[in-house]
Length: 588
Image (cartoon, rainbow, N blue to C red; front, side, top):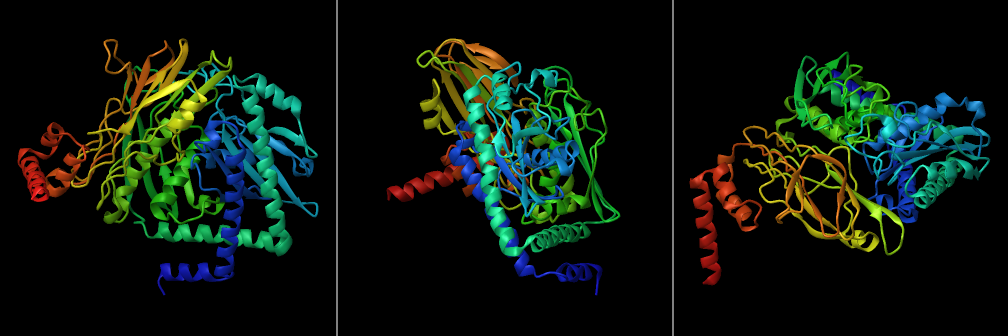
């Protein structure tokens, strides 16, 4: 029996695999029920429309057991909230009816301040058996800019209210004084209070469902099945790691346009992947220094990004729980962009997290099956915020959205168009919702021609969106990247297109903006156009079939000039001839 077969046999010993699968799905159904409750009951568009939230179930030891299928980067804040809670409060001081709140990246395991976590202990017959946890992205938690997130911030003290791990409920009673204090430090106080109360109620709902499960299984059975599940996850990941070359090491470096302040050299994000003593090691030495702007990646954002990459690349069906984490070693030099020191700003960390995920994906490419390799995706989290006071209602508003781009082309298929990649998974803000709830008009929402890198397989297309202000004194902020270099192609594929921010596009006052701007003042009728980069191409463009190029031209995915520059005149002439023949056949 070889080592892999022996390991596989060990996985199957000691527990009932079918019972474990049923148990795992029961836990996931609890988290999904929590998610549905949170989505339907919340008040802010960030949560109810864009679903920028996550939920999780932890055991009494603080180990993640199940995460709802939502935002991968939130895994960091979910874990961090429970860790911070258990570090702050001895177990004998945690009581039934308590709930805890936190958001700070340096003392409470958060990743940036707008993501507020609520953790609720679950007791059964007086024993602490679990924690129900959720996190919601809040439209505003104070700070220098509406929305609390600006890539140009230079300290976390500019980014809003910092909340350590602290009680928000005692013996089932909400601490209204604390909620009022939080609300006073935001530009949207009523919305904050309402959404936080929904988060508290969501955990109570999940706790009720979990108690029913424990009642059927018994406390000992519940805890034993959790241990089985965590052990199985770890052993299954160990099998995937064992399939990698134990002597191989691979490095990939990608770059941010800047460190948030629009000046200076590009910032490297470097990942080296290797196997040491049966563990998967990711070393980020060589990444850039601590960013002056808010692109720094706090500890738990780094952990969430790395764990997502491992799951996505080695075993997409692996459950996201603490069982996978003991087999992964992360090394990040202190004082770098991947391991900042307080009070370094972190508000726009997802831009850097996305690029770091791209570096990890790139480092893994030589180590995985060639048939599963891919080019780089757009690897950014572009976003905008419009804010101001609606003169018709007198109310202050903040409208924010993150926008999808192009996925990298794969060996065997074109990249996906207009999607979120890597550590984000929020939905778009529907135009109807935007125009109904805010004094804004969406004038354009489309896929961006020529944005995907050309190749045997084409990179996915980015999105363009143009939003016009209805009233004067509208404040506009935006954050993006890849305005200087597109997503790298692979195996001879061409790079993807670059992003742009344009003020008043198509007018005499058109202005190309920097990739990161904060609190620009727009007058009534002014518009912002945001163009999102596409994904890199895969394989030699000369190998793309003529009929596929013809379809891209017909569907206006690429223009003729762009096609000629990438594919050459011979292939494009053949594609145009093919289209003419098709038209003649239809006419006949």
